Length: 321
Image (cartoon, rainbow, N blue to C red; front, side):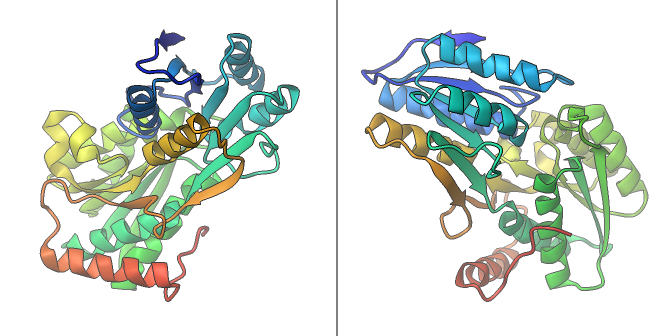
């Protein structure tokens, strides 16, 4: 664990328990960290980082949360659905501590002192799926998921729906790097590279990843194949290694930083949040990036039309296959 002293006068002490990959994954965990860092700078909170390791069991996650409780942290944010059971248990045992969990709204984590921060990933993925279908020259695209769990299936389902809205006959390859309970698919760039290489070699020319740190390998494969990759969570054309940024067509923005900052700002104001809060297109909780100017004005206009139809309810995006 590492801690950082406050920059202002808030009494909040915030502990963040990361998912596999931790701070520095250029994706999901980094987005959560950015929200906490902004709150630290603007609200003057004290923070502590605690990172998961591949293959750990439930007891290890519980222990990480309990260490933060024992250290006097008033608000504890668990990054990722893997913490659901441990958040539910530790929150019930510590009713005076406020908890938030990202990407879980199950009964396992539910509690009076728990905020469940979730996203309409399928809606943002629909838009980048449409972008892929409008960009491909081969009518053949791909999807690489980190771990085959319902959360990542939401990304795949939305991506496929968006692509097929543009071209019902488009070919879409799909693969998952690991199966639960093996969560290493979120932190294995070598596996990401191998999976994407197979898709590019098979004729795909755009590959979207929802695989956390493994996405770095997807970008490397796209660069070698002279194809396109689509990033996830953060604007990865800004966060990925410099040598691959130019092959990132767009990124599906999942604004975990916004959710974390909103949660902490409300807590600092004395109005702690509990229950399920959903960040969808209407709430500007998901979207797509235009860094690099790879999407033409015509494509952006079409994506924004799809976005308006999703927000209005004219298009309902599936969240499962």
